[in-house]
Image (cartoon, rainbow, N blue to C red; front, side, top):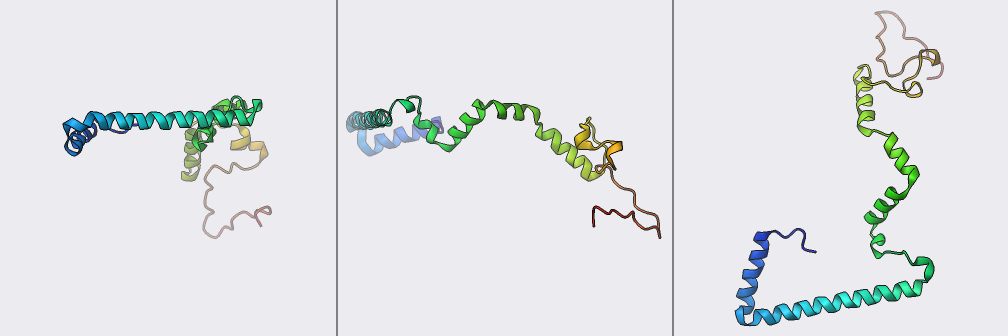
Length: 146
């Protein structure tokens, strides 16, 4: 709950509480606040229990934390075997470096599968930078491009 409150902020809050409530009333205020927090937690737990009992046995493993979109997506990504396989086979950094090398006209530094890089028998290598035609020479005609 108070993960982002540092020591300095905590000391400031204590000093401010002593100044506002006074040293005589501070223990009573702390007791009242802790009782209020305890009642809110009890109310929340009872509401969760009632909702679980109303949903029935098919929702016995339902967790209210799963309603948070981040938690739900994180759970689905970690439990799905197909996504684990895709994530392990895909290296985004390597792919980005290959694209950057292709744009800059450099040869790829790592071996790329023939289906991605293109093989000499399947046609021209599209990742290589084309040489510019000489003065007066027409560029080659590509029937597929027109």
